[in-house]
Amino acid sequence: MLVIRDDQMAVFARLFRDRFINETAELLRAERAEAVAGLPADRLRDRVAHAFDRAEAYGMRDDDALQHFTMLMFEFGPDFDDHPRVRAILEDPSIPADDRLDDLLEHLPHRVWEELLILADHAGWPDAGGHSDERG
Figure 1: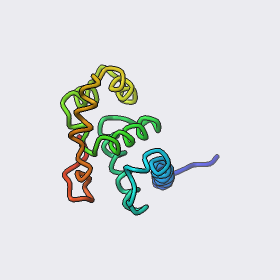
Figure 2 (figure 1 turned 135 degrees about the vertical axis):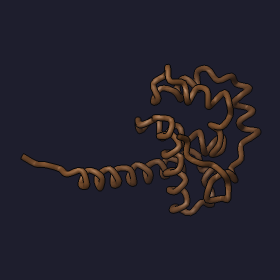
Figure 3 (figure 1 turned 90 degrees about the horizontal axis):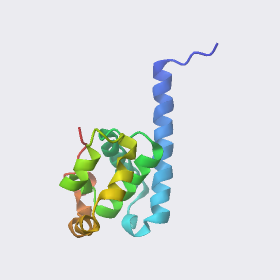
Figure 4 (figure 1 turned 90 degrees about the vertical axis):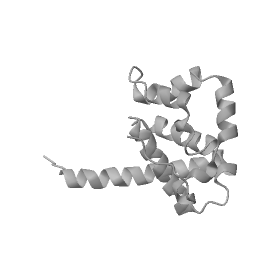
């Protein structure tokens, strides 16, 4: 019987995460080209990893949820989840963590999305001297 030790599983997990970060960075280059224009590949990967960390701090684990959260960060700024209406949904314990973004899209009023666009601070990324941090 094959036995995989915890340290081996940790290596596999890092490899899978790195691959997923790269896939998400490629997706951003394809679907949000204007949001990532001029970002070197390593800096983009760092921002994707930061977005994943932030999403995971809300309990998200599903690949689709992680990517969707990342897309929202690149669209509305790295601190979009600091908005009280957004945070209320992302921290709602009555909604499964991986379903919270669907709930956000379904229930957040259009005017709040517009406000998020106006308030978007794309200089708020940690590597840009911003203050965006992990939740939790």
